[in-house]
Length: 195
Image (cartoon, rainbow, N blue to C red; front, top):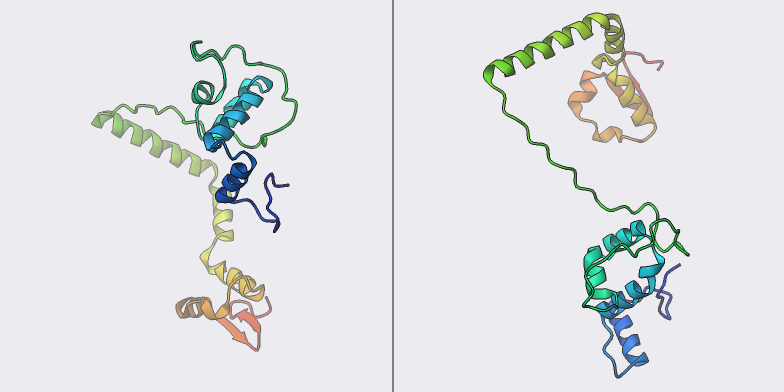
């Protein structure tokens, strides 16, 4: 459900909304900041800290800017977020729960390695890969048979039959390599004509 819909059942444009607000209150100039201020002033004491953070993210501003610029309060008071309710749920869900602020991860500084340390690291990695291969040699050979490029023809036949790939768009070199054929809509390969 849309919040502002015009008479032709479309979303209001910014101009339309501005005109409607001017017609409603001709003596006042209501702009974006007035609407933001009204929204923040109404919801500020009704939301918990997490929800306020989400509102700030959606409004593309910060919590301190919301409090200092939009929230109507005594400007002489210092910025104080302690009065915000910590555990009470909001009276109505005004923000989707899946919208989360972007968290910038802390950048870790990487120390430079000396040539000896680099060589030692390389040797350890090489030793690990050799031991891993020795332990899983048979399993890796079986997987290699499954992933053998000679079986790629099956994928081309299957995809061309299901129209995932247009047979005419397959390169001539690929057709020759995998011995693919297309006769009267029947697609097959010479590797296994019955497939």
